[in-house]
Image (cartoon, rainbow, N blue to C red; front, top):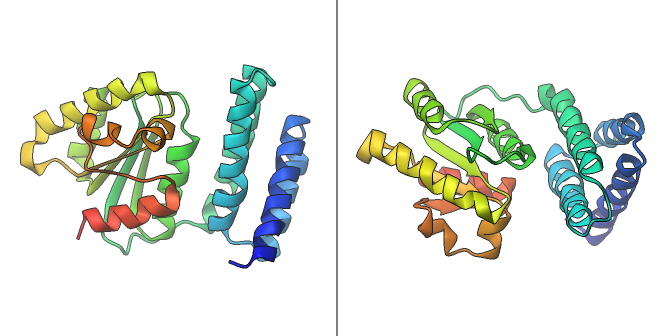
Length: 220
């Protein structure tokens, strides 16, 4: 990636964030669609525009510069746009691998794990996105029915890491040595890598692109 091309997406991210904070979802959608039609890859859109914007929106909320309502609006708008472009990334399952993605039980921020599943989709994995608010028993049952090769769990707040451990413990106690490898991700693990082993995960990834690479390593 050249410096000029990176500057283009940096400028786009600024514009995208501005439009969302103005409450102009329609214009933000047009911005994205025009960029894609102009040749911007979906992977760069996700990492350099969506992910960058979400991090900044989160920082603004933590600094009390925007309300919870505005943070939710921006996130929901990005999720809607992602859903509208999903047909462009839909894979064919030819990788013969299945990934299940979910949030820790009480974790409500699901955009990150949605991105992870979409990146696996682009690599032709079968993706099963469960989202947020999933009871541990239901996740375990789902894994049993769908023969998952990898379980990805997202967590954005430190106090929810104990919920990650509870889910991993439930998976391990149910499946024993047949349990799928577990990958975790989210801000707590980025800030404190020791948490990965503390919750019992097999691996972690800092973003969706790296998650696919780690997933491939875990299933070799």
